[in-house]
Amino acid sequence: MKKTLLSSIALSMFVLMVSCKKDATIAVVPAVSATQTISVPFSSATNFRFFSFKDSTLVTSSDSTTTKWDFALRFTKFLVNSNASGPGNAGVIMQDGIYSEIKSAPASGYAYDTTATKLAIKDGSWYDYNSLTRSLTPKAGKVFIFRTADGLRYAKMQLISVDYAPFVGMMPTTLLYKFQYTYQPNGTTSFQ
Image 1 (spheres, rainbow, N blue to C red):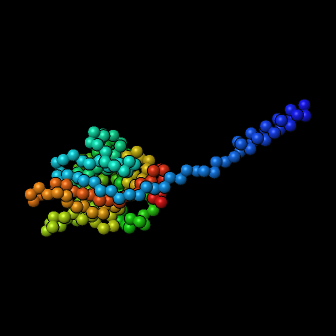
Image 2 (cartoon, rainbow, N blue to C red):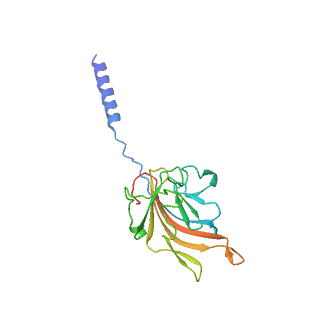
């Protein structure tokens, strides 16, 4: 009986120690920062180019009716995957500031594409056009804060440059959008 009692106590202590042990490793997922260049046809009559922050890549046009993309570009027109432009819950705030100093995304205040003509990112609001050089220059200090199409994650983005690619005669065929972004995959609003 004494052996059984000691065995029971020892087993109980072991179970108690194992069940009370806390997992000291909590997964911390850092924000992903990258610089990307995407090519967009130099025409307002072509298909949009769809971009996913999560996958850091262009999404095919066949997936344009899904939540696989966050924003789209065609010539100088931006779409946000929400309401009139897609089935997602994406939103955007265009904020004045220094990219590196924006440490977190706001909890509210995001704009949506409410109709085909009332877009969250207004054409011309983010660039200056020089008619002499026919060049587009992103406005300094404009930072886009996105809530992604899944409605659960956040990204900040700043356009660095818009360049022309090969010319056919006097007209360019492609615009090259270079941008930096920080995507937070863990669902928090922090960009750190």
